[in-house]
Amino acid sequence: MTNIELLEYAKKARENAQVDLSGFKVGAALLLKSGEVICGCNIEDPSGIGITNVCAERCAIIKALSEGQRDFDKIAVVGGADKLIFCPPCGACRQYLQSWCPDIKIILSDNETIKEYSIKDLLPHSFNEEF
Ligand code: ZN
Image (cartoon, rainbow, N blue to C red; front, side, top):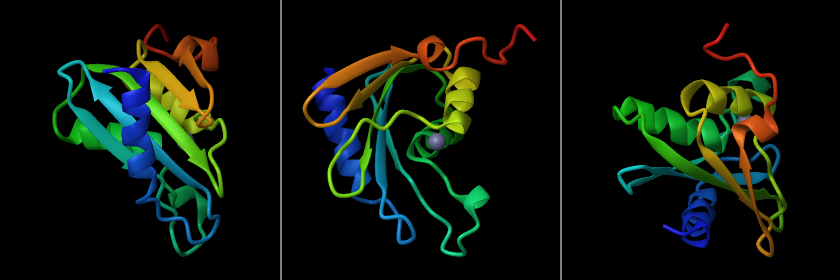
């Protein structure tokens, strides 16, 4: 699957974001090595308690893990309020990606340009299984 195709899944997932508080919608599409795509979106807690919010990336990874999937190829992430901007994973998601899928490729796009990163690019010197 091409990065452009995977980004389309992420854009579709973004439509389901629950973001009444911020209006900042994020979608993620996680490509498994089997070819299956598992999507996620950000979900804000209506109470406004930030720690209970769930990011799109972790939503997709948790869905995959809960289905017994562990072999990840790449994840596409798109986000923005009115228009798409580059939306790199937050710190918590970077650690989650490092912990569960350290070899994954991370695909970002602002709808014009596509950038690809490894988790080592985004979270150098991370806490990992070596510790
Ligand atoms: Zn996050």
